[in-house]
Image (cartoon, rainbow, N blue to C red; front, top):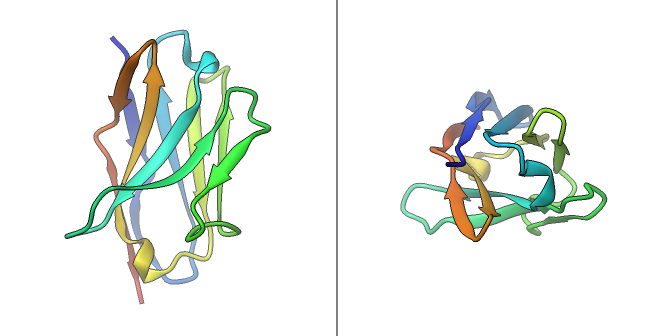
Amino acid sequence: QVQLVESGGGLVQAGGSLRLSCAVSGNIFSRYAMNWYRQAPGKQREWVATIHTGSSTVNYADSVKGRFAVSRDNAKNTVYLQMNNLKPEDTAVYYCNGFIARNDYWGQGTQVTVSS
């Protein structure tokens, strides 16, 4: 059973930074792309970023491009989301996601709140 556990959320002022982590159990992490999503209050969950297995290919939603950076450490089975120049509209619960061995796995989410 694969488990994803996010950490690193919190309260930050606009313009600040946070780094989210997602630890993935099991030893097949390196073979799969990983995603970050977020869900703001009253809104649908939206895709934020994807990092592919080789780490050289990353994709971002237009709303975070240039401010967020996704990375992974396959030795630590961990994916990261570095968030800079945060805005109040970035306030949401952030989720780590991976489609691993034909199953869709989600973490429990970590709250990010950006005050103006």
